[in-house]
Every structure is written in C-alpha cells, then in structure tokens.
Image (cartoon, rainbow over the protein chains, first blue to last red):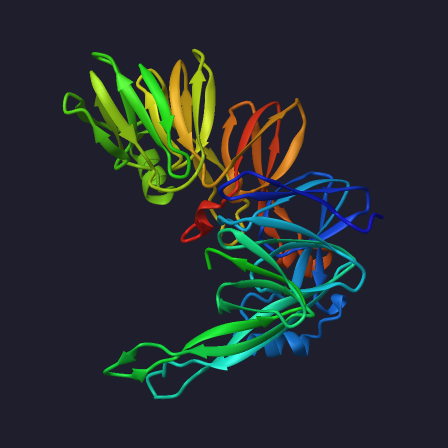
Amino acid sequence: MSATVKADTVGGITPAVLVTLAHGEKVLAAHGIMLYKETPVKVHRRTMKSLGVSTAHLMGMHALGDNEESYFFAEFEGPGHVSLSRDRGGEVRIVPLAQNQSVRLRNGHLICFDESVRYYPMVLLKYQDPVPDSNGNHPTRYVFADELTGPGTIVFQSYGNVLSFELKPGEMMRTSVEGLLAAAQSVQIRINWLAGAQLAGTGNIAIPVLDVVGPGMVMVHSGA
Amino acid sequence: MQIDIKGEFVPIALATLGAGEQVYCEAGLMVYSDPSIGFQTRWLTQGGLGAVVRRTLVGGLPFHLHEFLGPGYVAFSRFRPGEMRLLTLAPGEKVDVAEHSLLLATNTVSFDTSYIAGTGRIGRLIGFWMDRLTGPGQLVFQGHGNILAFTLAEGEAMDVDHGALLMKDTSVKVQAFNQPLGAGLLGHAMSFEALKVEGPGRVLLQTVDPSRSSGAL
C-alpha cells in the first residue's frame, strides 16, 4: 500500500478533489462530502476511537461547541476514483507531510487525508468575547483545529484564496482570528487585542487578533 | 437565433432572437431584454391534474414557464455562481436536466418531466424530478459550481451523490440505493442515499450540492 494518496483538484470556482486509490489503498474523509465514486470503491465507517481519539475527548470538544467534530470518518478503499467536495468556493491545497511533521488546520476545512496520517482534534486557543451577552457576561470563545501529523498527504479547502508564509524563528505576523487557516506545530499562536472604537453605549470594545510567531509555515485565507 | 454565454463567475445567457423566434425559461430568470421582445406564459398541464399536483406541490417544479418572443435580445441568469453549458439537441434527442438548472430552451425543444424513484427511506420517501427536454433545438443549463463531464460506455456505472447529478442522456439509467457506511447493523443505520448511474451516455455532475450551497459561494 502506498504511503501517500494521489489527489488532484478539478475545477475553478468550487473545486472538487479527485482521489485515485490503488487496490487496498484507503483515504479518510468527512462523512457526507462524496461527490461520486467508482463502483469498486468500498465505503467503510472509521471511528475516531480507532484513530486514537477517545470518546471522552470528543465529548469534551462537543461540550465546548465544536459541532464539526463527528465520531467517525468515511473511509474509501480502492481500487478506483472517489471525488470529494465541500460544496463551497475556495482554494484547495494538497500538502504532503513528512514523518512526524505536524500541521494544525482550522476545523471544518479538512477534506481528506491518508490513513497513515495521525489525526487529533484540539482547542487551538480560547479567549473571552469582548462583547458581553444579555446577562453582562463575556462568553469564552474557542478556536478549534485538527492536528495532522505525517507521514502522508492531507487535502483541505480554504475560504477564498490561501496566502502562505514561512516565518523565521521569532518572526511574528498578526492575523484576524478568522483569517488563520493553518500553522505548523512549531508556530506559537497567542491572542492579542487591538483597541476598538470608543462607543457611547458600550465603551471601548477591544478587537481580538492572533499574534503568530515562527519558526514554521503559516497559511491565511482571504475569504474568512 | 444566437445564444451566447457571457461572464464566468455568475454568467448570463444572452439570446438574440429573430422575428417570430421564441425561447422559454422558468419564471423569474430574465435579467434584461429588448423592449421589442414579446412575453407570454405557458402552463405545464401535461399528465393531468394529478401529475400537476404531484410535480408542483411535492416535487417543487414550476406551474408555468415564461416565453419570450423575438425580434430582439433577452438575457437570463440564475443569479448565482456556476458553470453554464449550451447544448444543441438533434431531432428526437432527449436529455434530463436537474430541476431548477435549466436556464432557457428554444421553443422547438419540448419540455416534460421524468421521475426518479427514491429508496423510500426516512427523509427520502419520494424521489425527485428532472426536466426532460427533447430536440430539435438548443438549451442552456447551469450547474452549482463547476461541471464535470463523463461519457459512460454500455454497462459502465458510477455511484453519484444525490445533489451532484446535473444532466444526463435519457439512455443513462439512474437508480437510488442506500450506501452502507461500513458493515453491520450500525453501518446500515448510518447509510446514505446515493445514485447508481449506468451508461451508455453522457453524465454531467456539479461540484456543489444545491441543498448545501446556501452561503457557500
């Protein structure tokens, strides 16, 4: 069985991913994003537990509001082609990961990954919402991510276009909370605040941003 | 008659009609037209009252079509992003187009509907309708997102998501089936409905499921 799945993108506005599987080769994808498949391609249910993600961890993620997280993936087994689409516009990236190379990808963007890739959903960071709710409390907001560790290929889709950066050690860039798409595990991500406009009713409401510090790869998307 | 597709992201189809030439579309698709263009409504009554009620109230197909009569120009859009295709049908040639995907057809193209039965599972108790168009003439249809084209040989088959099917030759057979998600009772309980599409003939798929396209583009 090959260590990396052969994946191509098809189309421009709303690209689909075309995965070519050899006999016995497998790819894992979120349930419900299959566009078509050749009849010989088998579909299995692959539980998170079998990938090393405990049910307690998943329940904890759900409790924090990570509604994207399912208890299983759809597993497609070759031979044949399977095409996948997230039903939206945006650039698709096919990224091969080396042994033990880790990428943290914002949740809801992953299309598929090689079965040799280790998958782990996580809380990337949390912060207090600067805008109070109706009770005057500041609810806690969570940024969720999928941590994917090689070897193997991962395929994901952005909102809009992807801008890639390679940060040197200590080099910093600032992104909006929504703008960050992916970052290497070596990249530190911290919440920071920009002074917002002074409003008569609410006072100064700060704007949360992310300070992203290298070394490592950072991807930002333009349509978040 | 001249039909041109203009634009890429949210394209329009521009029909330039000679005197007496006619095109039709579903209601509400006209963007602009020459003041000289005539307009009338065509009611879809084929199959009798029962068929009309089933088609319109259950299937969501329109009660009527709008007809535009030349001379002049008239432009149509579905006001959403997606690739458009212009197709020329020979006399007697038939194609099925997913509902609410047809943009316009010349008046020589006859319009009917064809029903594809569902699996009867909960949530899919009924199947769905496609627009059946018979040549001669020209038609324009639009996909959600990009269009992927296949030509299947006799007996060649593929499994297609429910929302991906955009157009097919009538020689292509379509049957809904439950695709289990793994083995055992749980695999069947978590199954999803897909379509077995079998050649010979052309099949066009779209990359965005219309039922999930809201806000996606």
